[in-house]
Length: 222
Image 1 (cartoon, rainbow, N blue to C red):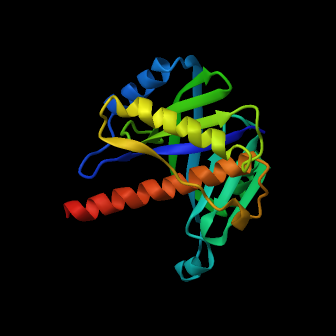
Image 2 (tube, rainbow, N blue to C red):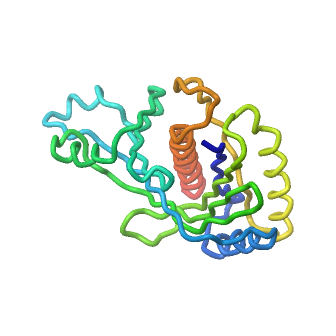
């Protein structure tokens, strides 16, 4: 499976994300000859345990996430970052969980936007919005390099592309920049051969970072 970097937009201090930035980012992809191919969507869901007694709450993981990815429509991924666990399951696991009433979906975030082809790269640019809401919570970008499936071997070319992309975007003087956080996949028991589980971990890491950024901005305002 091709290697993928998942990037998120880091606003400058005192600024927030808005739809104009998303428009400018999309225009920048087209400006470097990215060819629009269609729409894409991924969803990340926060789960909480269905407990009869609140006293048992401490026994269950707090950051229990479920992720659906467009490239694996029949699969569902679970990530428990605190315990360094990632699992791939059949999509029907969601129905099973509902019937067992073991975990309840607390809140869901949709990642949706457009996909572009740029030579050997596939780019996806999209907004992060809560389910059943239109309020923009963030901007996300996937950079996929189609010829290579080794995380280690892809590093140089991915970094080179990232530098070129940042330079192209900097000409638009936007109030922020894209950030790439590299999780330690080995801690989750994954090899350097890329899989969708690697993608799920990147999504989980980005959402944790977005929440931390929003909380720190909130504390500054208060």
